[in-house]
View 1 (cartoon, rainbow, N blue to C red):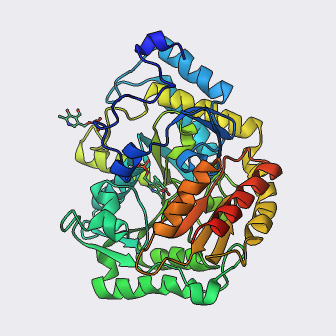
View 2 (cartoon, rainbow, N blue to C red):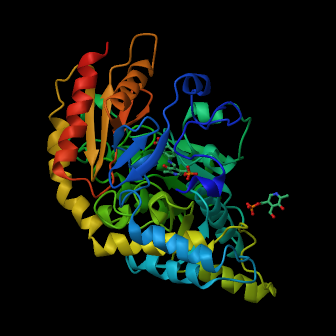
Amino acid sequence: MDGSVLGINPDAAPNNLDPYWMPFTWNRQFKKDPMLLVRAEGIHYTSVEGRQILDGTAGLWCVNAGHRRERIVRAVQQTVEHLDYAPSFQVGHPLPFELAQRVLQLLPGGYDHVFFCNSGSEAVDSALKIALAYHRVRGDAARTRLIGRARGYHGTGFGGISVGGIVKNRMFWGPLLNGVDHLPDTHDLAHNAFTRGMPEHGAHFADELEKICALHDPSTIAAVIVEPVAGSTGVLIPPKGYLQRLREICDRHGILLIFDEVITGFGRLGTGFATEYFGVEPDLITCAKGLTNGTIPMGGVIARRGIYDAFMDWADATGNTIELFHGYTYTGHPVAAAAGLATLEVYKEEGLFQRCAELAPYWEEQLHGLKGTRHVIDLRNLGLIAGIELEPRPGAPGKRAYEAFRRAFDAGLLIRVTGDIVALSPPLIVDKPDIDRMFETVRDVLQQID
Ligand code: PXG
Ligand code: PLP
């Protein structure tokens, strides 16, 4: 980049790291020993020191087409040269209309509308609000409860942390939303350790939903939200039959099912969305991340046929002209929509979802080659996602994995850690030698650390 535009050199470390309060980060450690990424191309970052870092995590699970793709960069440049911003309430710009149509093409026929926002957290909040309002506009106003799941991650808005199941993301913020309950998570190392793909054991975890229904009276429950594959809490793969059973129970009781596909959307499992992969159709789907290849923030909520119509019918019946009292300044932002359109074009042109499906068996094979490596107590995979669970150090949970993360970075590989679980989710343009390098680096690092 031409430094003169910004008046600073974006390839150099800032002289003062202090004012920026970093998210989900050990701030003081980082500021003593920063890991700064300044450039990216394909499957690599370049660090501020000029080192090449293999991107084992597609950024934060979002750069599915690899970095700095020409078509996406040009789409953003061209759009912003024509128009920076257009209001999103009562006025529009053509691009989000086009994008909604293209997103729907990636889904089974039962989905017919897309609401846009700016992140996964907003997508979750929007989906929860749409679910509550859906029942309300249909005259079923008693349905106010929301059911999430232990170890669920649904972003960091109040809605998302209320239905989410990560204690540290919840414990500081008081009572959160009212009327929320949680399913148990499906993690079961005793039965399922080292399973390749979906575990055989555990569909019964879905039956807990019946118990929750019995406890609260199902006619008070608005929606159940789950990640089809739990990503950020350590790659928890759904047991065979589990998602189907959740769908059946929701159907039996008139409860909406929401799949949070912020990670699984846009090819991560080798299909457009996880709904296709698992053959289970939720009522609402949240997405973000891969929607724009991470280039410009954007999220969305995809609605099954009938949901949008319920709002239209309500507005007609009540004489309201606005059918949904919800939205953001940057809903359908034209520059984000341009990035989204170009991204979907790249996915299609290069057959990246198919590529993911084709590479998945090799990925699985290489991952499970780590069995027997020091500290490894489980290996899990689906699509191009891998979870490597480490035995925690006694009295120091998370420390071993953090050290692995730091050493991997020094060895030229970006991984993600959560607790003592390492997650890998490379861009879908990854090739076999990259995959080999990733797992070799992880193996080396694990052999080196205590
Ligand atoms: N739902 C799911 C399933 C997610 O994975 C969000 C919602 C929130 O999206 P935003 O865009 O508001 O962050 C996410 C985000 C990690 C990691 O290390 C995962 C996420 C975000 C940051 C880090 O696993 N997922
Ligand atoms: N706070 C204030 C004072 C605002 O005026 C607005 C939007 O107009 C918001 C928050 C919400 O911002 P956004 O629409 O970007 O989510």
